[in-house]
Amino acid sequence: MIDLIDSHAHLDFPQFNDDREIVIKRAREAGLVAILNVGTDLASSRAAVALAEQYDFIYAAVGVHPHDAKTVTPDVLAELRALARHPKVVAVGEIGLDYYRDLSPRPVQRRAFADQLALAAELRLPVVIHSREAHDDVLAVLREWGRFPPGGGTEGGVTSPPVGGIEGGRGILHSYSAGLERLEEVLKLGFSIGISGPVTFPKATGVRAVAAAVSLERLLVETDCPYLTPVPYRGRRNEPAYVRYVIEAVARARGTSAEVVAHATADNAWRLLRCRF
Ligand SMILES: [Zn+2]
Image (cartoon, rainbow, N blue to C red):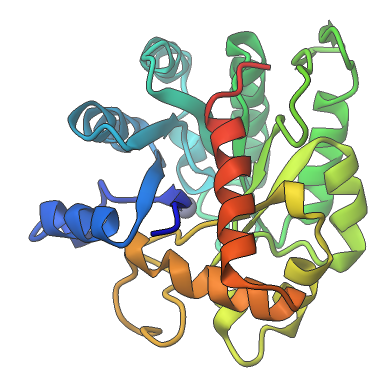
């Protein structure tokens, strides 16, 4: 069986309360060799670490989603810092900006994003970025953050991480929706591209164009489960085992085999999961 990696899952969410163990077992049986479970607030980050402790093939990212940006206090940052010292915490996330739902005021979102990017730089961890209808602001922030290769540095309150030898090692733009026109800059800034369920949707030609254009060594696949369920299960709850439908759709878009995409995305994910700048 081919090794698969889901680089973005929320198995701690209540949608899995009734059958979490079964879902995780199905993932293993489907060939998943690693799952990055991504925190969305402090409680969810703690739960992600707990899952990573319980299952050898689950890894954790800790962070506060832009929806909950208003909860990011100095105390919360201190707790995230402490959680991030756990050996199975491999990234800070998901962090970013969401101007679609605007559940936290935009200046508060920008502050929380900046604070958590600084934390990631301090900890030398890659970041998992959520960007929804906020791509220009996200890129402006990341441009600043990534300004000091290769040694890192601080200027004007922006702390930038040193860059190791890892291609795409600064982090992931998860469930990438910033379009073909921003792809080149995102890659130049040292980020990898996460492709999720919408690549299987009939109308999502833009996502397929990105999946076809991104260089193979920067490509990651993810479910974002319980959300963004791919065809043929669209409309139902998503789970890591369904990452194969994302892989198959990416392969069709690129005119290659699912094996090639599975191998490459697993290699890329392993490099990131083991990345310490
Ligand atoms: Zn997510």
